[in-house]
Image (cartoon, rainbow, N blue to C red; front, top):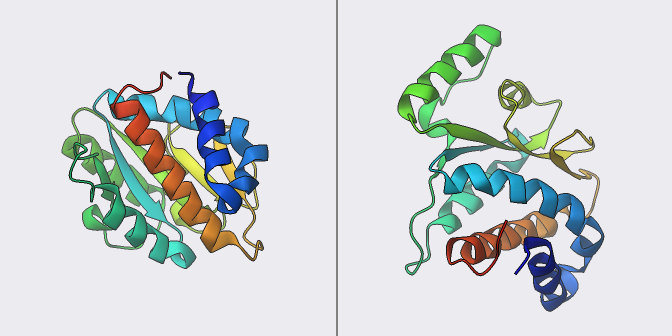
Length: 176
């Protein structure tokens, strides 16, 4: 099955909580189809969020490898590698060097947050980063509004869609 058709079915079966995604399905699907490929090729995702979404990072990391029937997915917290504040571009270069050594198969930054947060500069230091951004639409990113009163619920819905997509891809139910 084609990934975009699969997304449409999952969104429609998800009821009211996922209905908002139907209009953003093509944007999300096209981005994720490209970004899942490095994961399948053995690269790791280094996840981090802006300060306001620290709760979401914890939620995402607690859930992603909790399924007993699925192989572990290499998604790690940036804070585990670099728990300090990034002060300048030199810090970012050193961090990238560290992660290149830690992940010899490669890695992709997965940033969820605002472009006003200093952590955004870390994600922007690499062209292949996966970005879920607030209040800005950049090429190769998924955009949400930070003023949306249902933002937290939408983030949880996005996690569920990400997770279901991973299952479908890993178990060859869909093709990218």
